[in-house]
Length: 148
Image 1 (cartoon, rainbow, N blue to C red):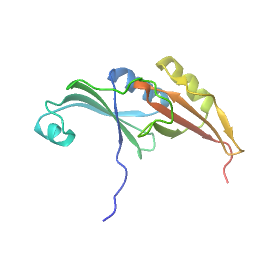
Image 2 (cartoon, helix red, strand yellow; image 1 turned 120 degrees about the vertical axis):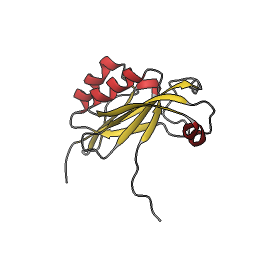
Image 3 (cartoon, helix red, strand yellow; image 1 turned 30 degrees about the horizontal axis):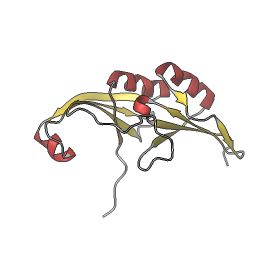
Image 4 (cartoon, rainbow, N blue to C red; image 1 turned 120 degrees about the horizontal axis):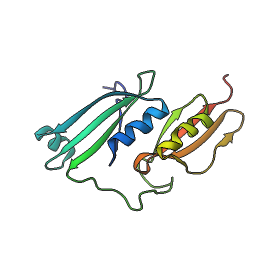
């Protein structure tokens, strides 16, 4: 038995509206919002008393999604420091292909995005950068320069 596809990546946030606005500025589309609580949520997460609001955003092609979750209870716990460097073990970034990296960074700045380093050129193939997005999540951006 093989997996069918990757369904989504989950990101826990404190400010759900701000996170939605950030990813919409990136070009993602809000698919829906809902409230999650009850026994099934407790069983799935291994937590007691789960009550959270979630929003699903998807890429324009419909193939990739992020699930943004704001926990009402139990309170969200986070790593310290919040803005950890790129080489921390575990999930640390989500990468998106973009048409114009400089325009994308400019659109994200009003939503709190800050470059982690700078926009860098990889040979004659890509422009790449990392920006820090909602809750310190590192969002990678890649602009393909030439198409073979």
